[in-house]
Length: 474
Image (cartoon, rainbow, N blue to C red; front, side):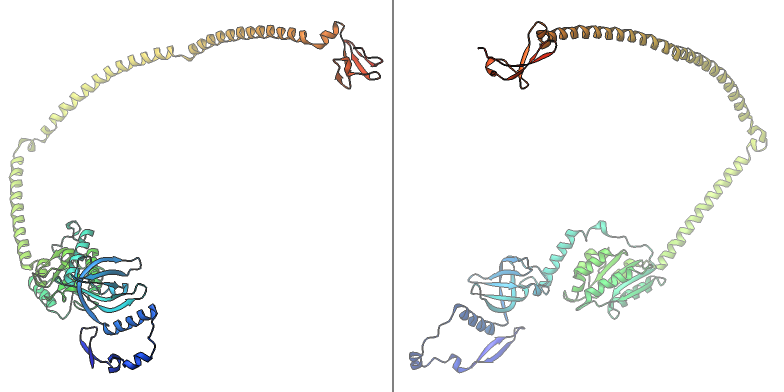
């Protein structure tokens, strides 16, 4: 017995299945042998092994739902149809091969393997590649990259550089063996044999072609004498032209200091390079025509302009000759002294006006000087000093009077304070015959504070007495 299995390319393979693996168990053996008991993890592990072996390479079609990308870079989503759904995982290392950005609602074809996520006991598809259904993967990637670069301003007209009117060297980035370079060389040779071509051979199709095209653009930018660059190739399918839809090529075109003409495929073919380039040509031959002016036409135009210029110069010389003859016939050429007569007369007039102006000016300045002299006398420092001295004497007198008044007031106030002090001065009381009795440096106010035999001191108005208490009177 065999079982059909798809490999990773969707091809069927036959695998043998042992009969004993599917044969029904012996009824008697089932009655005598104990039943096998699984742990949850053990059963899940066995189910995973069976599913991974049976569905190692599958293509599944459905609609994306709940698409999320974790901080780790891995993406998780649900693939569903109108009757069922299954979880899917798109690990970061597989995302580089997908040429579009999946989103909710996309109808896609997913390739991968079925496995079981042990922690939740759920089966899921480990996605290895993905293609949209209906709209091709390349076309969707084209639209997404176009929208991204347009938002960044790489297609803006303000960023596009004008082509030189008369280029002497044209750089070409294309395959050295393709029809595009032959067409370009034929057109340039036919239109202007004086123009030279610098070819930067590149791959225009297949792996590494986008990197090679971008490097070619950068290489030609290092050549100081390249006036314009043509990039392109002949026609082909979307896959054949895809190198010119890569982001690296678009950014190399945008960064170029040399104007770039994009000539990819046929007139109906459009690539990202066409939108970023300074000029889009429908074919490589058309690019050569747009960048190379016809030499014969240039020479014919130069001859025509030369003839027009010479005609204009002859006419102008003839007109000047007529004017010169007319001027030579005038009288002042025969009597040169008359040329100076008006100037001599004007000089005399100006001299007279100057003399009159000087006289009037002197009178005005003399009056102005007298006026300033009187103002200086009035503003003499001597007068100001005398006035200052007078004001200072008045201030001094007022200050003296104020000081005298303050002294008199302070003296009267001091006398009043002295009288008040004398009124409460204990010495004044002693002068009237009173005395102060103290014991142990403490004044006594009552006879009960002393007892017979105590030593006391008596303070008098003049001097004092040391006494011994003999008797205490109430």
